[in-house]
Image (cartoon, rainbow, N blue to C red; front, side, top):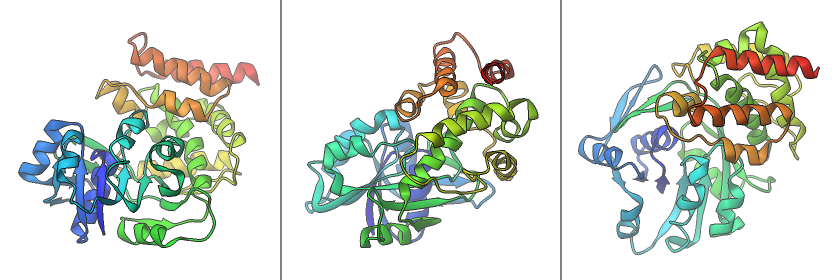
Length: 321
């Protein structure tokens, strides 16, 4: 298939590179001009323990997209930007999508409402992806593992032709009739990652150390309790067995070359604003609210990522119980 991927970082770049190698037509769009230039000059490089390869693929900035789209328009697009940039990415598409064109979101959080407002709910397909990847530098992406990837219609129900086409075309993807259940599962797992990111621990250590187990269970349960659908299991996460999930998810993450979350990298490596405010729209509760405040403190220089932040959160949960 021919597809336009808006956001060529960790996830968008990984998906796009695999699709190019499989013979699909891909146009990458990214706001980082250095990344775009590096891709056009030397290709997009996927590195890490899964496999290493380079693909030659066209890349443009958002300002250049309209000029590069053929007269027929865009039939399929992927939104793979950070969730706080969803609206600006979606604004590129209304005038460029074909009459039967559609958009797939591979983002963290529940961003479908923003996309639906821009292009119409009937044009939006959603997905859950747990593949671990990191942007390393212009033209280079680390793929740390192979993990669950599910694609489905927002309303659930039977697998549609477009969902089947996407699942057949994208790496590791499978169709699902309950994509929202997977997304809410990731909200719960993600809540634990947000907690761990305020420390300097690896994902596996923050999930496995006894000192933090009650904290991790409490914040994951806050997310599960707010889900309007049946929460799905993946990669060791079981919504009905959070204590066991911690052990399984820790083991899963120890097998990955991606030792720390993208949240931690945003805070400590890339020094940029995280997606926490977008996620906070989905999850509210005393524990996650406290984590959000702590993330803001780190973003604004009042704290740094260290274990005593996790200790403070653990003490807060212990005092509540």
